[in-house]
Structures are given as C-alpha cells and as structure tokens.
Image 1 (cartoon, rainbow, N blue to C red):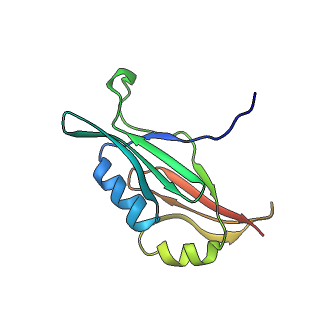
Image 2: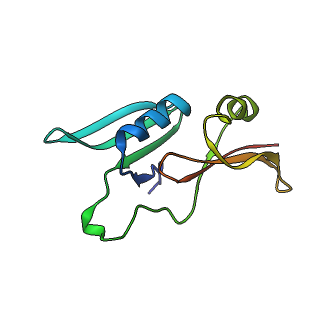
Amino acid sequence: MKFRDVSPMLESNDLPATIRFYTEILGFKVDNTFEHEGVLNWVSFIRDEVNFMFTRPNPVMKYDRIMLSGSLYVYITDIDAFYTGIKEKVTIVYPLENFIYGMREFAIKDNNGFVINFGCEV
C-alpha cells in the first residue's frame, strides 16, 4: 500500500471569490468544477504539484461557521519573488523571514480566512 497525495478539501461561503483569489493572486488554475442545478458547489485548483479543493459548506456538519483548526503549508521555490509579487494583495500573517529550523517562510490569509504558509529550505 502506498499513500500517493493529499488534497485539502476546504469550505467556502463564496466560491466565486475563492476562484478569483486563488487564480488572480496566487496563480493557481481552475482544474475542475461541479455545478448542481446551476449552483457552483465545488472547485479544484492546481499549480505545479499543489492542489486544493473547495466546496460549499455541508449542512450535515451543523457547525456555526467554516473553519480550519490549523494552517496549510506549501513548499515553494523562489519564495522571495513570490512574496514580492503578492505581499501587497493579501493579508500577511507573518512576513518573509528565515527561521532557526532551516526554513525561509511567510504566511497569509486567503479570502476565507484560512492561513497558508509558504516556505523553502534555507
């Protein structure tokens, strides 16, 4: 048995805004979508080897709001250029810096409030 990949499935109250954020700001491409009765219910994004999926909130879950108890961590090359290109367009959680554990990283919030860390080895 071999685990092959992981693709986060996150919820969004505004899938069109999520599409704009991930494509126009982070440079992802829409990989696939699913509509039901004319309503967009699911979208997947891809950029190089990284992918995310977003869906409308599931009423079966019965929680007050969408949430993620942690953060997402994306390994990236040329982190300085990426940071320079997006820093004025996003909410920065912490700026680009080198950490004692050997990573150069920064974190942002996406349009849904989820934290995404970007990092590369120093």
